[in-house]
Image (cartoon, rainbow over the protein chains, first blue to last red):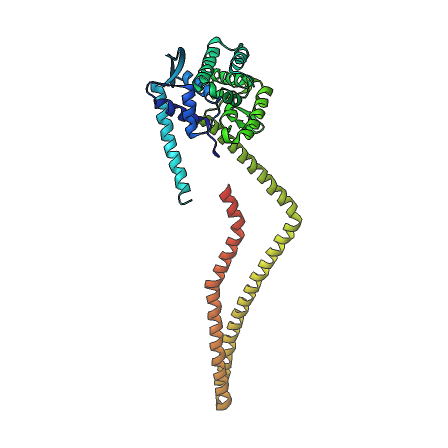
Length: 105
Length: 266
């Protein structure tokens, strides 16, 4: 992608991806889902997930899967509030940009 | 190529100096990651992670950030405000541009290796915007100051040319004004003189009326001169009433122009 993704937008994308799974989701899948939208390296998301967890936007729990404990991430109420805030910011942002781009083809 | 086991072992030993909980979290994440990706992708992931050293540095850098007061995130360098670790991570391209991102990653790794981890900070977007805005204001004030300095210098250098120029412009103005006054006064005097001589001619004509030819000629030419004199006088008074005040007003406002500008600025 030619456009840079700022840290706030990355936080928002991660929160949105996690929020899509009410039962929670895990690191590898989150990375794959985020990659549907933006290009991130394998090492990008751990610090983001860890920080969001520390900020109480995500909660973690371990669930047994294929004979091992897998770490799951789930969005918290605080995380949802944050995500909605990001969404509204994003909405007004892309609308303004679209107006400026209007007519370009 | 390093194996997954080697990678994880090395990462664990590199993380031996961070809190147990943080180490466990990170190792769990990357273990899960390898497990969920499957053995097929192992090599690919290790290649993309580059090295355990790099991963350990990223984890440690973010730990320092988390411990820090959010207000103090980020730091200034000669390049301006740095929005942190993410300059490393997020702007990195993967996949199609493998060669290029490999290079980028190496540079980033060098940067990481050369810097003390605690220097790394992470800025929330809004904070970094604020910082940038502050910087911009500072910069614009600076440019303004330099501009004023340049203008002062220009004024100093312009003095040898400027003062004669101002005087000559002033001289030309005075000349024009004097010429206008001269013409007006000339018209006025001519008008009055013509009225006087017209009346004198008329009286002379009446005195000479005994010789009707000369008397009437003198009376007639006296009346013509009187009429012309009256016209001249009327014209002069019209100029004095209408044109001169307008001219004076125009001249005054022209002189005020530079001062008016200055008072607006002040």
